[in-house]
Length: 153
Image (cartoon, rainbow, N blue to C red; front, side):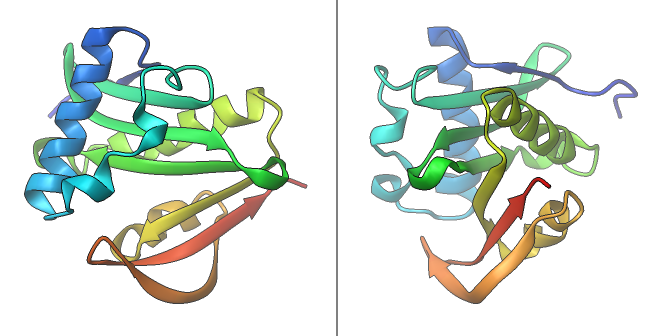
């Protein structure tokens, strides 16, 4: 079990993107049976990466173990999404580190309102950062989710 926090960086190279894609494939498509056509969308297009959509990659010992992405949405909020941690890396703080870094990057870009669709099992993770549930649970890609929001004072 690693004693150092994961290294989290924006995915900027082709190799980084391939690592992000491999993590999402393993977690969402393979493990959680999310249909590929729902997992991959226009926000993953090469012309959006690093411009309108920011992908983050978490690594331990040089190996990819997690990822996330964020993007600006209507109204000036940042939408945080596609948080994934490989099963072997779970329980070591990778998810917490990804949420913290994603929020920090979106705040550095000027955002003060944040929204995400949390898998209900992961809602406590986001609640620990101050996210609050909004509305009823709903199905997204065959998995129960809840909309959560956070606004900085």
